[in-house]
Length: 303
Ligand SMILES: N[C@@H](CCC(=O)N[C@@H](CS)C(=O)NCC(=O)O)C(=O)O
Image (cartoon, rainbow, N blue to C red; front, side, top):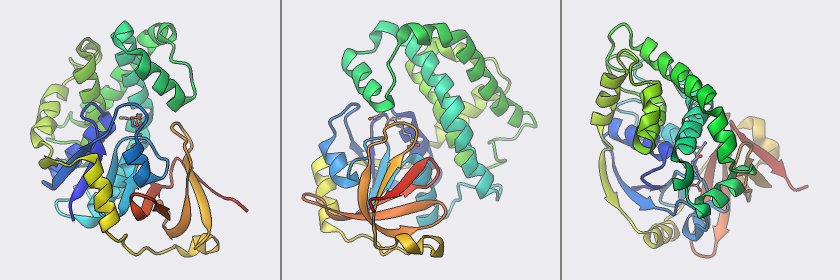
């Protein structure tokens, strides 16, 4: 079954997944989604989750890049995303790259872009974050955030100091994709801000090596066809972990705890320490199972 990535080209979290698809040299189809709400075709699949990227394989829908790359590794283990045999630490690196590192990149980019950021985008991201989009505050934060960005990038440079090719050694892996997508974001959208890290030893050559990996074999699918593909497919059977027996078969609501907290409700049909899977019926997509990570997501029951 085709791997569908609901994405847009300017999304750094999508770039993380695209690099992982490249490491594994997979065939996949991009389903381009709008950069701002509304996203009716995406929500038909996810039941409310609006963030990008989302991966779809048949009627199984995977939310959040952290869970997407985990699922890619499960389904397509070779070549591994964990070439140094440290899968726990490699996945934990997202708690660094997707948070502090990413936030510093976002601030320097949007402060740098200034008035070029459109009103519609600003309103949308205010709704997403629940915070006012305050260009003056962002500009004031730039010296600090540029120093943060440099400090994060300097860790990458330090890891490369022994002359290794990639962050985990000779072969590329998830840690490369996690770190790279932040620097790619800065370089792609506000090149002057890359001055914060451009001179760090080894960084530029490593960046070029990760970029050269590419994105695997990419094709395209329309949003309508992706929804139809879910309707034509049957979700994979799941298993509820013993620790979650009390929730098995019950209606649960899952929402992100950071931003984009829109709730998704369905019947719990699968779980592990890393994920929950909930089944829902959609008028257009039919029966789908939505998979969400556990870290950064809250699960509640209605009764
Ligand atoms: N933790 C999420 C973060 C995803 C995220 O923040 N994505 C951005 C785009 S790169 C987003 O969804 N922005 C709002 C939107 O596209 O509606 C992940 O790893 O997938």
